[in-house]
Length: 299
Image (cartoon, rainbow, N blue to C red):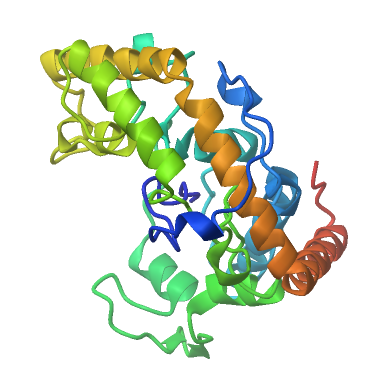
């Protein structure tokens, strides 16, 4: 199962002193999600890398489960390219930005589950996780020892840990570049955006608050259809949000400021980023070797 990086979570978001603010480069014109580009992008885990790691974990896990005489549990496939794109659309600095979907999906917060995943048996759960369905540790199955963490952990260990999230900086050294929500240039952009939204009848201090409004989140059963009135309000709010971002050039300013902090972070973490990239490459190479041995294509 693949999860998006925390959409409103950031690190190092204090208010910097003006004298120490990193210098801005050009302020880009951003009118579409695909136009968001940052200096940190080349260091982010790629969708193809994450896909290979997940495939290798699944292969090793299935091989382990088979030794217990159990059938492997089909895994739910994920479009890792889309996961990376969705992570780009969500950020503590700008909340949500994807003008192409707001008229129909609003802030696109509902989780859509397709198909009917196979329900694991108690035996499956024990062998896969090393725990029972109630969370109790299980150490054997049919007289055979179960490794700590179960067969899934065996798969994870084979590629040196859980895969990172594609397109997200949370796995980078020190959690990636700081998110400059307190930078006065961002604060001024927030103020302009907020005034624009107020003129449209909405009261939010910044774009992240609009996206994070609890009204948009499903309550109870997340697979149930959202309330029609609430969804209309969400679409209207998100559409106004996108329009105000365009009118005030919010995205251009936000990405220019974030890029300045990206450059500062890259300069101060060059050795750590090199080590991170090399280790990720090594992990992907291990995954490729596993898949070659398994006889499964990775494409």
